[in-house]
Length: 246
Image 1 (tube, rainbow, N blue to C red):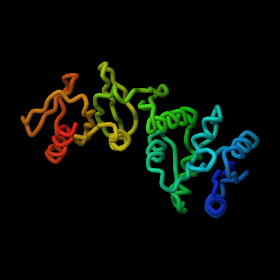
Image 2 (image 1 turned 135 degrees about the horizontal axis):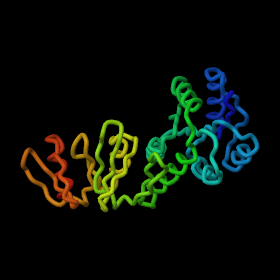
Image 3 (image 1 turned 120 degrees about the vertical axis):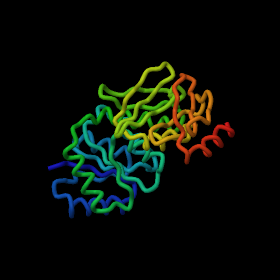
């Protein structure tokens, strides 16, 4: 039996989620429902749950604020949110789970099943999440979850990202590399607001590090580290426009 706590400032949402869990997730026992992060912190320390269903935005403090108060985080977290696009990006690429409101039965069951079988490196995932939330606000660094932990990298140090199936290799200004088991598409979404542009199926580049562009073979970019990157034909016009705007 998985022991769970629901944290949501909207009583109706909390009750709806509890009803769904009771109907479709018999392996989950609801220990408490909390409507603010102060009560949630007390309930977590009291009950030591296996799962916390955690709303992202709440008056008086967000779900992220709650997690910064608790150390270590030794429970699975399933976030619930209605619309917070940037938070969803950070959650997804910190290897954590989320449910979009209104929550559907199938999504709930799948999230609970994942939580019940997931091998736990939860504290590392939470630390990555908190750092990536800071990235989206002001910190301008990104937490990259690696096999050994988390590498915190200034965005300005990333020259390019190279996709390799389900992995992404980050090429840094000092010529070092970091491999992350996430797809390039995810980092395209996360870094797009920081002058990164996907010029090819396998390449996301930092436009600030473009050294030159050649029309040979359809289009070749030379980066400041002297590596070359092919530009796909369908991306060529948009790339040249972005460069001209800088």
